[in-house]
Length: 384
Length: 85
Image (cartoon, rainbow over all chains, first blue to last red; front, side, top):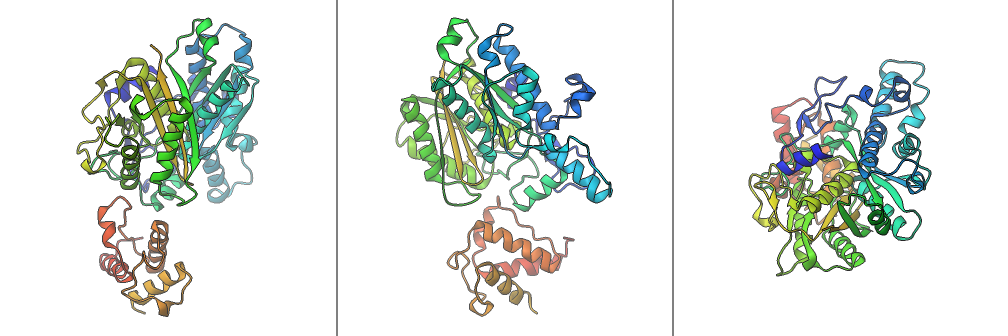
């Protein structure tokens, strides 16, 4: 977590040359991959037989989150915790490996745990089993908004008194040759880097990884002296019921407005928005219009996209961005929009292109807008 | 068959019309095209002509592609370059 924040705050991109097996000629030469991940440092060979790369990321992130939250051993609120994990694609490496064996190598069979490795709920289930968590546990799928929806549902679960502690976030590990061919067919992948809100932006760059947050009922967290990074105060999700892949200004605007309403806060309370900011021509233009419509003539909040550093990790993206937003409130530092070398005046926003900015941040929003017309927005408050 | 005729056929198929109703001047947006229709059309052209059309949804020049004739010209250029599909 600390290393991720440092990279994001410094605007040091994790996007680099693609490393992929079984292909010499990938349709896109770059991605934000977790290249230094050594699964054997975290799991036994027996455990790895049941874990796709996505669940490996999820379990490691969940272990880190729980360790950081400092629960007492056997805390009943932890053992009854909900586990809600956003997943855009699922066990894609398992699918890819298995199909390669079947179609390319003409193998007769595949690994016996192929099904439980590739299922969408594998990450949530593996976290539950690894940490002994017995609460309401499931996966959430809303493409690029999955991580944000997962955190929003966990927030509501605690708000309704269904649980006192929840582990929520997102995971993704779908960078395969087939995935890149498919994304390339949408003609929105960048070939140089991800430059959100920049006039010379050239598309999105795929990423991977997992971010898991521990959510805890406020009074309980305060009573046990937990380290509180920030407070989640609102959430809203909605659907455009329109275009399959293009974002919708009205839908995005309504999601932000409803998230603020559910938190009981007004636009003037918002100091920072972590944008969806994919770096496509379309998203950044529409998202910035939606933001400007909410703050007409008022002081605009700072807006930045952290996808220039982290890439777009689909189902994990919203969780990474919620984590970044939480840490921005904690450190009172707004992370920059990395690679935004030519801020697009048409977007009309201060996207913090120059580097991290130390400013007072009282409330913040984190936006996610997904294929299928699904929007999700979380609202956060500083814990002073 | 001229490439314009094949493009007319592909565009007509995309919007469930008869190719005779589609001309070089047919405006794609007015004919009901959205961004995904454009993507699918480019893909159909690449498959049919065995060419690679340098088409990028992040390219601001995209807005210049308004009519069936504009698509046909892109195809002619791609055939001229004959980049492998």
